Amino acid sequence: KYVREELGVEVGGPVTDAFILDAGTYYEIGPKRMRLAVALMNFGPDMTPSGSFTKRVGVTTTQALYQGFAPATEFKFGLAFEPVSTPRLASVVDIELTHPADNMETFRIGGELVFSNTLAIRAGHDMNADELKTSLGIGARIRFGTRRARFDYAATLSDHLGTVHRFTFIIDL
Image (cartoon, rainbow, N blue to C red; front, side, top):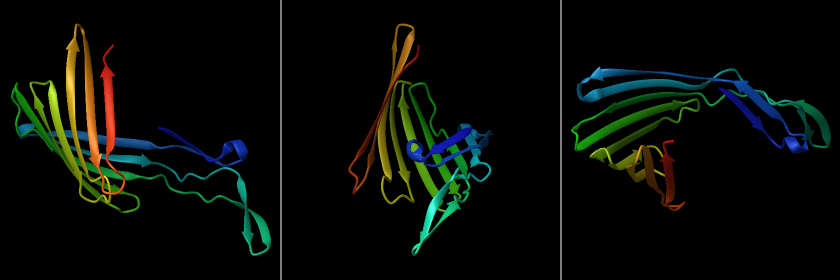
């Protein structure tokens, strides 16, 4: 993928761009539709902003070049399985471990119950987050004629930031 960052270009600020890679694999390992996935995201060369800036040390000023930085590379590992799978009720449990470049690992767990392939109830928890740890949600699939639509709502709870609400509405064309 191509990544570009512009920092005040309208007033002569720097531009940084690079091609970086996301790669991963997925493997079904058997009972209860257990799945294992690994991914390496944002892998690529150091990114160096273009141009220079004025550096002041005491009363002396000099022109300095921007230093390069590595993209925010992450390694992700996920495991999911379906403890219940019938036409009237299905469930999914998933676990995700993320190891970012700054070594601040995250561990997330989530689940979903789907009733008659129409109504879904979801919950998730981020074990390492300071804020926005727990999310709860619902979703509905609606068919009208030959078209299908999907509505999803999620609320992420926070002590200091208030509750964050997310809505998604998708119509298949």
